Image (cartoon, rainbow, N blue to C red; front, side, top):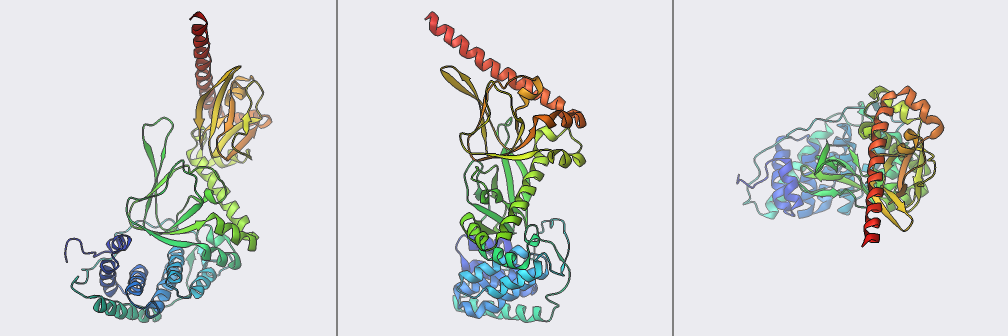
Length: 439
């Protein structure tokens, strides 16, 4: 095997991502011949064989790969296989039906919530010789796919406990069937950005195979901060389907990745026909948003982790359109705002000018200066984008900080620092005005 010949499924996926279907197929078939029950090896052999040969000859292999993925608990891969089959012009209805039946909320097979799967190297084998011509390679693929599909028929299928799939298993069969069909699968090579912080997107992604890295620029850091590495089943970018706010993090592929892509327009159309899908999706996204805030907001770090959820429940959701004010300079605030998504500007106003003191994003708070120092706000706070916030009303503020005194200490330090920053801006502008008069 040459140094560049794919002998693992990662290498086969990378070859496919670069458009070399033959090299990908040589690696996939070699792995499949050695591991007949591996659903990814079977899928790659069937799909790439279909791309080089006759799709109908590999339809049974694609179906068997999807059924195997379902039985092994990898619903996203099964959905991706259905989407790729559809791309080949094959009927994928039976694949989607099987996925919805197995993973719906009322499925008798759903028994538990499994922890995220640990990354593995995966099976490997010496790739087939590059000297094989196209016809010989397709024939070898056909034989391997048929052998795998026939072997899988001898194994128990359509039974056994399955882990609940996040989001998917919160839906009944009918809305789940509509949901899985709207996803379009896509393959990305290694080290590619699929989501960029600050960009406005209209797509969400589910990892069907591979891993992605999530990073974000911190306010007091010179570069991006790595937040997480996510694998099979992870959902990223879902807030883009509900909000027009910019992305809050960058997502980069850490390996060749098969993703399920859901577009806002497709989800909106599906929700029109299945309102339950919209309700469950909104509930899921809200819960995820709160979970992320609970984990990442600096102002909640002093709270016992077991108590953070109860504290956040004291807040009410408030949304703002671009240009809308959360806080007005010189007036009392409605309470403490915790930014969930979007971005705001803190703007200090002079009679003839205004200065942007800061731009704040998810996890940050505003309104603490007026609440803690007990005086009118010293600056406007204006939404730059569609922004979702959690509001702790003034009348609940004292009750909350009595229950969590550490929060008050953090808010006091933050309020005094921000008050000094705003005051320094005001002093600078006064000095500049005096200079202009003297000149």
